[in-house]
Length: 183
Image (cartoon, rainbow, N blue to C red; front, top):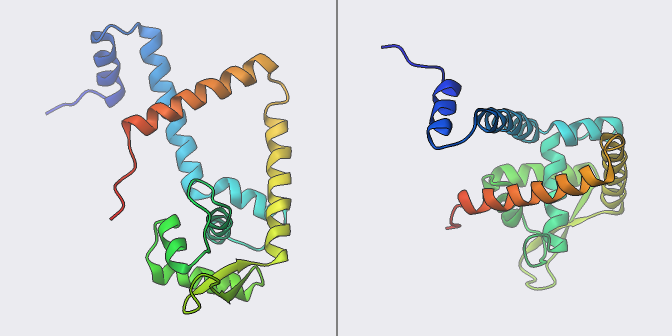
């Protein structure tokens, strides 16, 4: 049995639903670009490139863990709280033993300290050191320098339009692909 290439079939489906050829081609192009963007994110290309530029000696996974701890403490997309290995595992979608090994490595590197919880003295929490905060500031500075270069040739109107449309796209993705229920 012979199958049509997926893009040909999808293009035909889009056209059958009333989309013009150029719209179908644009959506297929967006899908391909989105795939490559997500793949780069999942591989950790962006943080790894910046960690290499800063000579930080961290792998993308370690950076993601440090960043997650800062988000947990700061209340980014969740209420602020003390960072525990359990919350780190949840934030990174890892098993607790893997999260514990990553945290231990960051402690060994002087980027985290273990401390006693102020909320529950029986719990151990992960606290970023001054070196961790300095690394994150350097990371953000380097990231924004690259972002500025990326948009240097764009008009102000294009930047504002892109930001608005990307936000709209992201909201649509949240609606079409809601987060899995946390159990």
